[in-house]
Length: 516
Image (cartoon, rainbow, N blue to C red; front, top):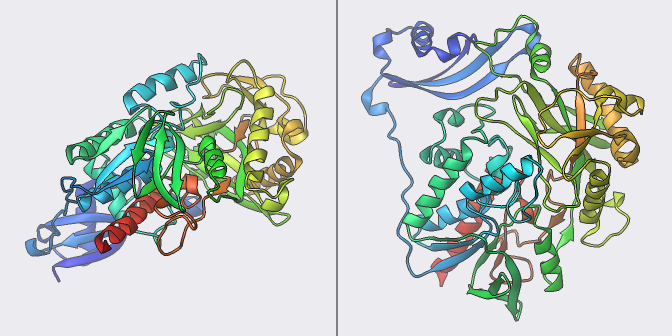
């Protein structure tokens, strides 16, 4: 047989040495090393159970030149006369644009924020607590929130679309090949900006358009059909088909949809805090005290607890990372986490969030969840310090219900101030967090420690609003030509699932245009 697939267990030292892997493969398959012309890692996952750390690896082995697969590349055509308007240049919008170009359809992207280079300047000012640009920050701008979110690419959305295609597009534009087989692939917040620039170049070189600093301020409708959009209150873009991919923080878009009688609805989401431990502690908990940092990456964790029929879980865990200010308004406090590609800071942080249900909100209107989210963010801001200094508390003090007299060193650059988070966080959130931390400490002994700090609030886990669409056509259920897409529409949760949704929505529009 010219192609063989086999599973092999490798030590942390062996997994990065391809000469050793080749020798072990030959031994396991009972063939000479020279017979192995090439091998590809298909899947690699770390197993730290039972106090012993190994990697479980699936490998394709090729012993015949004809069996070695060709590296197929996606071909993008020059844009023709047909065009589609895309609102938002996050993962959903960018990957929708790439899919349209596969069929030679021109994408015209409107992005409220700046290109990624200039966006980084605004983020630097925000980190120094100088000021917030409401349209250019960690949420808005080229690449969307995904550009500065560690670039975590794992998803449970394989049934929705081709995950492999999305990952290959990233590698084509500069991501490392390891993301194709890592069980928890990530790109790194320091690498993503260049990859986003490369995607922009692909779109522009094939005839697409991207307009930055272009905020949609009105939708023009006629007989329940989209006609055009107004940008910055002055310019009009006429379009028969519009992909709405504005992300979960574009609250003004939800308000605009409501004013134009375009149906939206409340949806459940999760809210909590971001917790940070010394990375060394997490490594010892996960690997044991005798782990070798020369061969093992900084450890990750995934935790979940159910209390009173309500889930509490870790979200966007960032090993070797740092906490960042993710507010989009000057009177709210929101935090998120990110990591560079090397994941080499001394800190491990993660969102720990509690599920919220529609019955938790006072009202039943479309904005009920969004209002709840915003109220907690404003409370967090009031309980923080100057500008975006964040409210914080030692984990053990949170559990005891007392104010921290001092705070540990941490990664949050704008600064933290001691705050009684246990007091002002809604009871439904704080009580479930306390139960979860007790449960997490049983799963990871040492997790509940005085060395850990919690920072408030982690509130943008997903959209608190859904823009309903037809299951078959992906068009809005009432407005022809409007295609809600990605996280902001309530149909995705992360980079890959958003990219898949953008690809799927673009495919539906292509099918529609081909029938005309």
